[in-house]
Image (cartoon, rainbow, N blue to C red; front, side, top):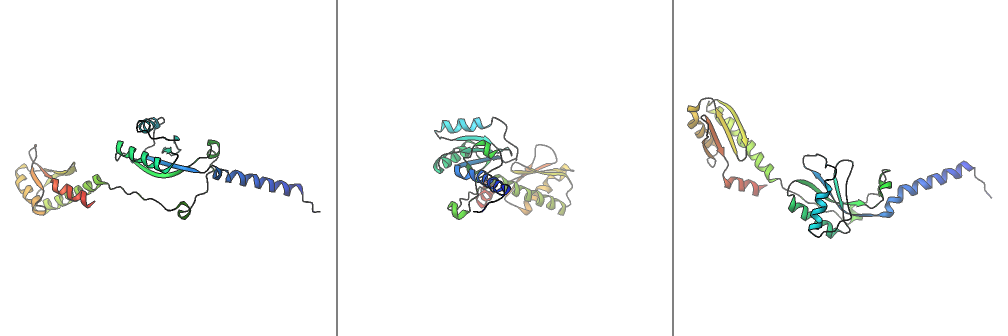
Length: 226
């Protein structure tokens, strides 16, 4: 009969206990969840889960739990994927474009386990049955980029025609030019129309100010392209 030193037996027991503790989160499994974060990367305030809970209750959408993680992101956990997708659509309708939202899975492990930093084993895409990708088009960003191009082209057109200006700024759906010599407003209008005849260009409410505004057709075309 073989006899092992006590320290060896104790080491085996300790290793088995640690392995059991690390593997324990896998026994609780995971449930479908939504992860929300602010687009300005600011953290959610404490108690901000109440507004989402109230929204889901008003829509008759059942949820298991809501909480904020250490990074200030909000988690909403559901019993099944169908309910998860219903909640996602309801939040998108109510807060369109305000939050970045991801459909994911959250561990059902109790707080004392997650507090130790223990998480279930991450499964690969093949074991999860694939992945869903949701793409969102930043339509406002596309218009902003178009205005930036218009602002740059306006500066170049004025320089090419030797028309001095104090400022060229973009905002809303237009680019506003402040000329040093108000008498050259007509020349500035012609210079701007010279590189884009579709723009609506006119004198502003202030002397020496010229406004080049995108037409509804240009905005629609840019949005469709995006």
